[in-house]
Image (cartoon, rainbow, N blue to C red; front, side, top):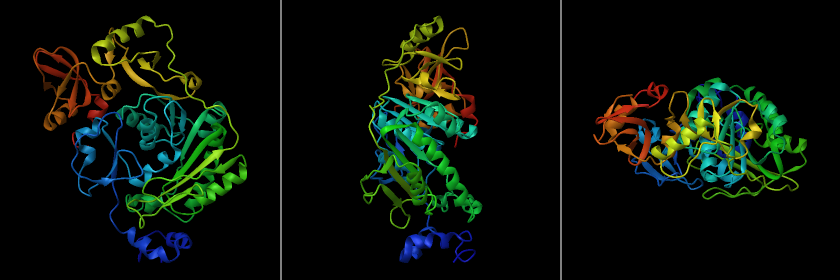
Length: 441
């Protein structure tokens, strides 16, 4: 059943067969089909027009299946954070967790950031989202993606889960553990995952997942909910992980849930198979911590006494963006709008703190890239697609001669970044590190 005749790793079909019975041939046939692609529009604004959409993903707000053809990551609206490319079944765990505005929510294994951005959209910018990944390179990618998606209320950390558990006991209303796994659900999407799979890998992953779940349990308040998800099929990392967790933590119980377009998870467990729905495959479990403690609704942002630089940044903001936003903290040489309750994370390895507003390294503040992606600018320079690509390469673009100072380059109403208007030219302030990705990423 395994090996060259199926194109699957040795031992994989035999491991999965007991879960599927007579459906095994259909499952194996599905793995030979093309992967299913999807995207989820940001909730910051109304979804913009975009060619190549097929039908909605019913269980996720603002989500669509995509046509097989099309370089959606190369579209200017992707750079602007109008949408996040995400496999449809991976969008199920956040609706199961059901975070609410004002809560304190932890995404413990958050990179590359799709689920964290989905959580942030459901929170509508209210409350506090802690997005963590223990691997430095992945945590940096997480930070970049949350910036691109205009997330304002997140603190991004790079810490081992066990260290967070010691520092933040009972600190969250909801916790998501999208656990590192053997990735069997990614076989047809990424052949490299299949090449690295072995019959021993699920056992190693299960041990790691147990430790992560134990840390997550410590950080959840009584009465709070914990969602566990993987993109793998085997029982060891899915039902087996949950059974082991419940045996170690009798203060938890399963929590039934139901999502539109999917079978009801009456026992709190949901499996998504690629031969049953249009997806790559996912597993979601929802649990509740017994008992009750008051909800930990995050306090409003703290406004400390402004120093000279913060006061200068707040005055400058009035000329850059519309609406009320105010710097209330310094972070890494920047003026930032930090979410309420962020002080609890000081002393941990913070990569991003709230919304980055202004660079304070020079004599006068300069607007941060994150501010352009989140805000409506006081002045903007609308670009067509060709000009947007020129802008992303770091080139200057024309603007009205009457325009002066910092303005946003925009595409279909979504800001791409900042420029400085001088004598009919928008001098490019798109971050150099993002330009290096090229015009067609």
